[in-house]
View 1 (tube, rainbow, N blue to C red):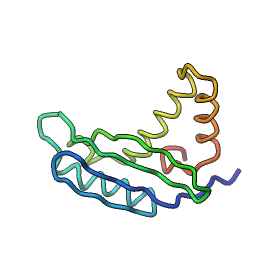
View 2 (spheres, one colour; view 1 turned 180 degrees about the vertical axis):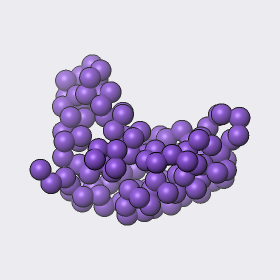
View 3 (cartoon, rainbow, N blue to C red; view 1 turned 45 degrees about the vertical axis):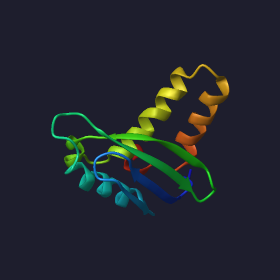
Length: 116
């Protein structure tokens, strides 16, 4: 089944160096986070990065990514993060409706390289 294509990803770094970036591909989002990882705290703590992912069918997923120095070398940090959160929701969300939404998102939306 063909997945719904990505429209854009909005990234907003709230801590550390305050910066925003809107990109139109998973590769651009991942490389942005890797680049920002170079200026993340060196002590193992993190800077908060808000994100909003929008697909061409107007589906959206909003969340927070904890940017760490280790993400400088990460392959697909955002995609892995989103897939991990949706997988967790499929298995552990109390509301059946939330489990269903998460399952639908995993099966129908382009979630980057973490799902390939």
